[in-house]
Length: 84
Image (cartoon, rainbow, N blue to C red; front, side, top):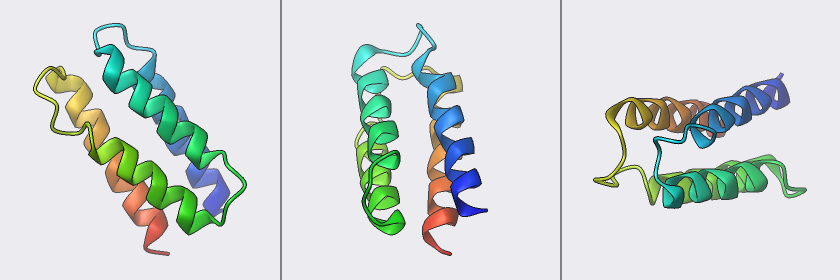
């Protein structure tokens, strides 16, 4: 069940990362978070690493508002996974 939730988060990350209106540095951070989620570490470690990577860019002033909203949704989903 938790891995299904992680897969859904990865899909959300892909949606934002494929948006060409999102700056490259943000897409790069999202790709890094995605790779960390797919890693072989313990779930809590993977989720924490992904949150850290995304939080670093969540307040980027160059981010379009629609992407910021999606980023917050991704962070919220990751936090709910981490809380389990």
